[in-house]
Length: 313
Image 1 (spheres, one colour):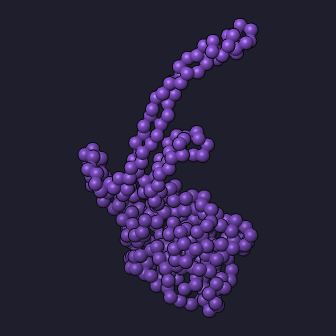
Image 2 (spheres, rainbow, N blue to C red; image 1 turned 120 degrees about the vertical axis):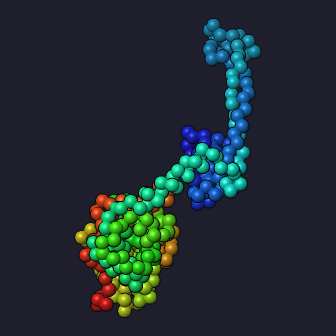
């Protein structure tokens, strides 16, 4: 935008905004299109008199004086912009768009009920199981995140899963199942973190282990041991990533949901981490998980816990 190569930039953001520096106009509507920025552009035409390119006055074959030099009118343009913020609740539906939406809504149940896998055994989604890292479904969620953005590791807070049921073996898994078990509108971001930040994130995740708190870290690409009897902030004993011990001075790519990336559940150490995939380009967690299960055929109930207390409890 600062290069001046573009006149108009339109997009979406968490908050609406508009700017015009006399050369480039930029506007962003909010992501849910509740308020939309409209731009009224005014293009003004004007003429300027300019000397014809040629010999300079006083040069051979040139005019004797400046006044004698030939000139011509050249057309130029200048433009201005007026920004308007519109509450879309006050806008009448477009009949064609409304018909398209209705057709989509009618087809949505069929899409949601499409079978993508099966529960090989009972799937325990109770909070007391998920929030201590013993739910195979939770592990699959983290695996799907890591695979989707090709990260070194993935972490998601256990509170992102809100089923609190036991799914019997043989139950068909559908996209509706995933939407129900992951009810938030999480998106998967990719961060660049150093080992110290990753360790701090894990320490935060196990800081309320005995309380079965939602911040407990569900991970992929990591093997973690911790001692819940030690002081908060000094509980993690070992971290293995990529079959190697975590190095505090090394950078890693980390997949997280946008809730954690924004500091939710105490993950403040991730807020300033560079975003390799930021929210505007991030895709929904539900879609990644559904695609992953469809590709693998189900949920493997033999997945071992990856964040383990010691001594085991």
